[in-house]
Length: 193
Length: 209
Image 1 (tube, each protein chain N blue to C red):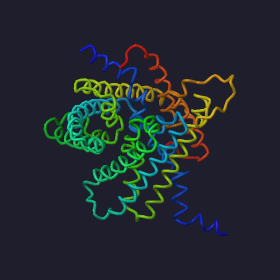
Image 2 (cartoon, chains in turn purple, green):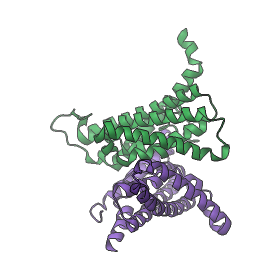
Image 3 (cartoon, rainbow over the protein chains, first blue to last red):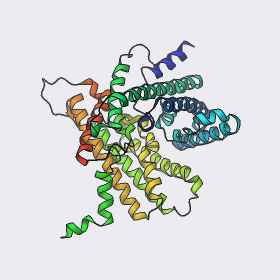
Image 4 (cartoon, rainbow over the protein chains, first blue to last red):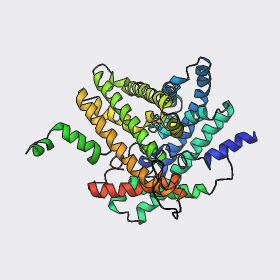
């Protein structure tokens, strides 16, 4: 159990998927303009990453037993696309309030590289099933944390600061992310894999 | 005289759009993840740039070749299957001939699949245009991506390791900036690069986000 919590904390703080591995940048730039949508996106990402990691683990073991690891990439991406599609239909039918809150973000998640990356890292690090689930949940939480912080800063900045022309939009998000990333480097040594 | 005529052909316009005006990275902010994560050394940047260019061209050409047979509803899945096939081919090639490089790039070669540039070009261009224009558009975007990666990695490698393609380029007294090899350095160099390029290209950045 201690090992699992360790993996969770490490993937939120020291091995943050957005700020250390620089993954999932496209939505981080595009959807961080206001705090409310950023939170919605973050919550959907946590859900999808945890689910797909849990689904992809047994599939990978199956492929490995049949010596077909080379097509694992293709299988992973199809699983992710199918999971997202299924989740969308399921929420629409049974939990309409949740669908109204998260529904618009779901299709975008298929192309969020953080989701595929968690499945690939799980293979590279030879995690077991529970470790994979905790790693997926932690990575999702880390990503949500990053986008929430950036959105909060951007929302405040839009009110008071004058950003130079060429730096507006993506440029200033990079600077913010860089500074937060420097801050997160302070966690190095607290926890690790 | 010929040069003036050249400016108005579709070929020239596609090339200049992809490499300069609509450059996928600084103008459209697509494909940032890999652009930041692998650019701590120039050789990684070149390998990644070539890989993306190959996948982009192959998938754009095949998408445009079969564009009349793809039903609109399943086109996304079709792109994904096509793209991941070529990514697996590229990954196998790297592992067979450049093993060290494939180790250094790690999971990031697999992540070419979710590189928004590849998907974006298939959806925005290849699905509507004939094969020769799609190939050229993909080539232009791939080159634009590769130039950006090389530009960023040159700055980062010199500052972080004092080397260029593995060869020592600075004097012994130089103190290396470790932070440049890590994520924050990538973010800062990218921000400055975007600032410079957008000012030169005089882009209307207020509309793009």
